[in-house]
Each structure stands twice: as structure tokens, then as C-alpha cells.
Length: 434
Image 1: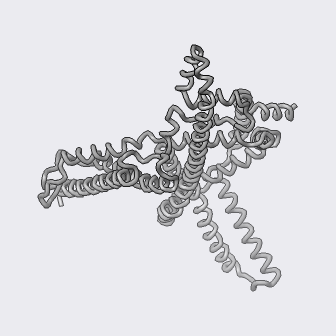
Image 2: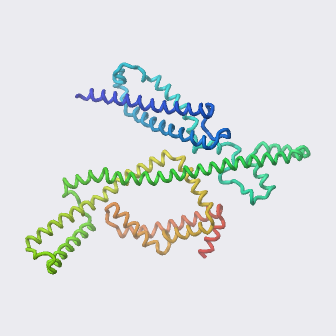
């Protein structure tokens, strides 16, 4: 088989795959369009008062599944276009059966249809983002507490946040106060109803934000961790294990592993002497003792060799896990923003003594008097994980600089952030330090 035939067959395979993934994305877009027609009268699938939350959650789950399928297939379609050799493509290579269905105009037609369906959902940070973007929505971190608020002040706050047209009416009221005094009870009732509606919507949005943030946090923790474990044991362990068996002399042992090997071999020799003196084993001739020591040495050498390769396995597996983590973060940038918002809100909702306890715990562990021992253990564990010897100079330099930087950053953060959003916690923390 010459190179031309191989290239032609590769182009045919890529063309068939391009057709399949584009058709799958097109069918998913049609499913979303059918869901819009069936449940939302052809409009965008979004939270509304005409549909219950249960129905909306059900339809949204079906929509998100199809959107994920469209995104996956379009990524494959784009990668295939990058690899596809259009210069060598002809009608026979695109479709050996002679069917001209997969033509450029049909590709454009399907892509335009897919874009018309998914464009309305592209800017959604989360399922009900359109509610947050509306002008009459209360910010999720500024819902006033009606139990503690002053009625007159609350009324003005609600009017300024919820109902901008009423603000204009208030400006005209300076000229016709008598007329608007008669309408004040009606306006108050409208504001009350509007406030309750917006409060319910924002509570629902907060709940959805927390669910999305929790789910994404679990994903970005578990997926890279499982990837690291599987890549190490299923991919790199067999490859490097076979290499070490074929080329044992190429494996270089570190000084720590050699020292451990010598100590264990001396322990085996001492154990044989003790068992021989106690009569546990029959008296060993020099040749028999040498044979047993040789067997123990071979076994210990294999263990030491595997331990030396373990650092390289961890390095490669961690690299794969890091790539997976970066991909998840890149494609989940909107969810990262939601996670940050949910984390800030959860932290600010804690009791002030709990916040101060977390500050003291963090500072004592990482920048306190006993933090040097903890950093030393962490750095030595990292060095052992990657199979490199611990460098005392680097460890001492790290301990002398990084905790100081963390302490300065924490003080600056307390001064700029905590004093503004939680002044009580800042005051408690400063009082405990003094």
C-alpha cells in the first residue's frame, strides 16, 4: 500500500466521521427545538411563571444534555476540519457510494441551524441567568432583611432596586403631591408583591448557584484525582515496568534508596545469623548463606528499582491530571465565577467567631510559630512523591520566605476585604491578636 492510497483512505474515514458528528449535533439541535415548541411555545427554555419549577428543571436537564452533546460533536467536527486534507479530497473520497449529501452547502445549512438554536443559550452563566440580567431583579447578595429593616427605609430601598418607573413617578410627584398621596397605598401593595416575587426568584437562583458550584467543585477535584490514579496504574506502570525489566542497568537509584537498600540487606544478614544461632534454621554453609543473601539482594533490588521509577510515574501521571484540570477550568470559566460567588457568600454567612477561628487555624498552621515543622514535612513528602532527594537548603529558604509572604497577604486581605464586608470579625481578630 503506497502513501497515496493510505492518505485517500484516511481522508475517507475522516469524511465519514465528519458527517456523523455533524449529523449528531444537528439532531441534538432539533431535539432542543422540539422541547422549546412542546413546552415553551417555541420560546427559549427559561424559568417563567407559566411553568412550575419541576417541569422547568425536567426540561432544562434534557436541554443541557443535548447542549453538551452538541458541544462535544462540534469540537470533534472542528478537530476533524483541522486534520482533514481538503486538497486531496474528491467526490469519491468524500463518499464512495456516489451520494452527494455531504456537500458544503448542506454543511453550512446545518451549522446555521445549530447556531440558531444554541446561540440563545451561549451567554447563560447558569440556567436562570436571564433573570439576573433583568433590570428588576434584586442582586443576589443584597436582599434586604425585612424583619429588621425600617419600613420607610425598606420601602425606599425596594423602590430604588425593583421598580425604576416608580422612581420617575416620585420625581413627578413633587409637582402633584396630592394626586400621588391618594395612590400611595396602592403603590405600597404593588411594591410588596413585587418584592416577594423577586425575593423568591433570587432565593431560587442562589440555590441553583450553590448546586452548580458544589457539583463543579466535586468534578474539578475528583476527575483529576481519578485521572492521576488511572494514568499511573494503567498506563505508565506497565510501560515503565516493562522498560525496567528489559533495561535494569538503566535505572539509577538515588542516594536515599541506595542507603535504604544497604540497611535492609544488612538486616537480612543479621536475621540469618540470629536464626542460625537460635537453632531456628539448620546451620548454613557459606555457599548456602551466600545463596540466600543473593536471593534477598535481588528481591530488594527490584523493590528499590520500582521505588526509583515511582517518582517518574507520579510526575507523568500528575502532568496528565494537570492537563485535565486546566481543560476543566478552561471550559468551565462561567462555573468558576459561580463557584467564587458561592464561596464568598458562604464565607460571609458564617458566624463571626467561626470566621475568626478559621483565620487563627490557618495562620497557626501555615505562618505560625510551629509552621516550620509542618512546611518541612510537606516539602519532604513532595520530594519523596516525585522521587527526588530533599534539599535542605531549598527547604530552609522556602520556610524563610513563603510563610512571611502568606502572613503579609493575609493581613492585607483582612485590612482591605474583611473590614469592609465583615467588620465584626475583623474587630474580634484584632482584639484576640492584641
